[in-house]
Length: 250
Image (cartoon, rainbow, N blue to C red; front, top):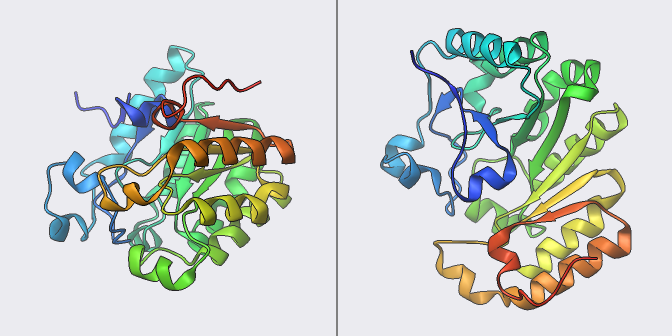
């Protein structure tokens, strides 16, 4: 029997040990996206998302099974798509998925670039904060560059407003600082958001020529210093840690 909740492998597993993708493909069009190659699809096809067949039925079966096993790990929505792509406005799968997972007392992590679209479900997340965490991916402070690299995702300011609103509603929040396009912008994003972010997850940029433009060892040092200065909780992904293994977080 097909499962929709799965255990990610490799770098993805560092973000969350369980995940579910309700849609196939994503219309945000981010040029750095790894998902087309990871799902063996051409970018043109991947950019036209579709609903996964029997997604909610599969999710119900998986949720009941995990609940019976007393699963305590969070389930991320999503890795190879975004739970709040425009298609979700019509289909509403993400809202139904939250209801199913909460109904089985399973933890949820949302990761999105959907901005205001994601606010539709804040009522559900706020009703079960012990089972919920809301996160956004932030890459750019330069909006012109953001439009070039993430053309159909929500503007950075919109994502930050949604993040701040979630925090005010008592929803635990996190920011994914991955990919890092420039060190300067990622560090500035911490300055802009640290007051209403409960956790920062920091990675690198991979499989893109832009990665050669960043001094990763210096960035690693600078980002840890800044996060410590603000007293923020954070997680540094292993590929970024490797650039300077002699340094330890204390």
